[in-house]
Image (cartoon, rainbow, N blue to C red):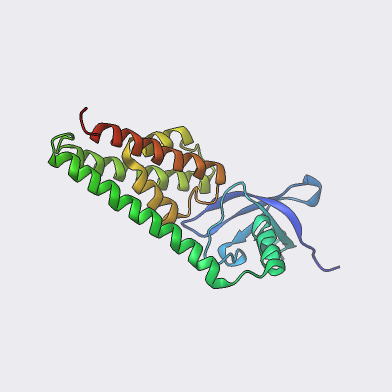
Length: 212
């Protein structure tokens, strides 16, 4: 009887070595199975520990189990929606390009506001290196959280990430989301992220407003 696809969950993943293990959602479906990055073809995306997938288990000659054709369930659903709706590729590209353009413009305006605040004496010049360090730390926190998610280790609290965004690390946070593909697909997190940017902008505007 040919093997069939079944639902499972990524139990562990070693990104450096490019392999991990997937376990069935129902223990009755068998033991966990080894899989290689070659079995997980998701357009360059790397597996995340805990994500739900479908896979085909096959028992190897040595008695061990191997998972083939490991596909993320949410990605499968998205592909089905794209087939039904068939949106133009140019429209999808324009949407992502428009978001990047808006954020680039926001960062440029933020930098200009900081420069103007320093020029008129409302902000200290030492704020520039402080913000540079803050943004480096923020990017590093995102990178470490991404690695922790892949390895199944303890994660950085989202409240801590949002605090660094609020303090002025939001440009690096946005860059990390875009480059590392981390937190970028979580809608609730993105909403809070945008709120942190807005609150930071309001605080900066209050500091720079003309004296009455």
